[in-house]
Image (cartoon, one colour):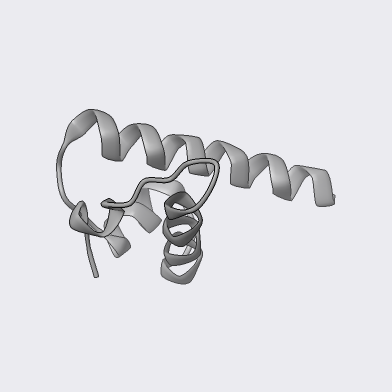
Length: 66
């Protein structure tokens, strides 16, 4: 069960990274949560994780409105 949760999270992080980098669009946290089938707080944690290593997306909050 734990591995499945980690797998889902890895897929979600990759999806968020690709979506935000490829489209150049600005999204709300709620819109991202709806697209990922999760809640707002999970997306906020994911976005914080995308700022750090190994991803290092320092301008992530410029692409997401709260």
